[in-house]
Image 1 (tube, rainbow, N blue to C red):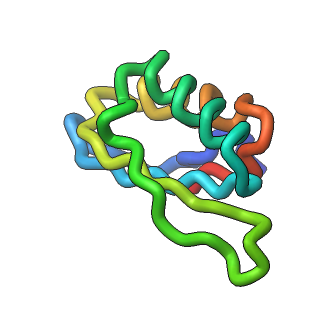
Image 2: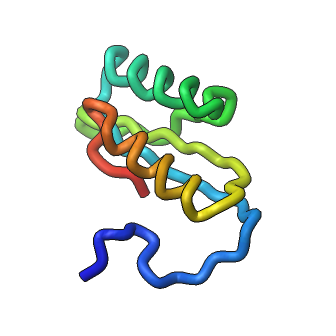
Length: 89
């Protein structure tokens, strides 16, 4: 099993990408996610989407053009490392 979230999929770059972040709900986690997006110059692309029916989770979407597989892998790891982020899809 590959640990690479993109596996053996061949992707042609540049490519439009839509990343969904599933996070714990709350202002503190939002601030952390926003700071992470600022650090990679994607803050203007961060959009809140759905909140779980229980109110425990909030999702966010980032849509942008990726220039390389390395950029995608780096962003994947960057957002996975944010405390409160449960999934990067």
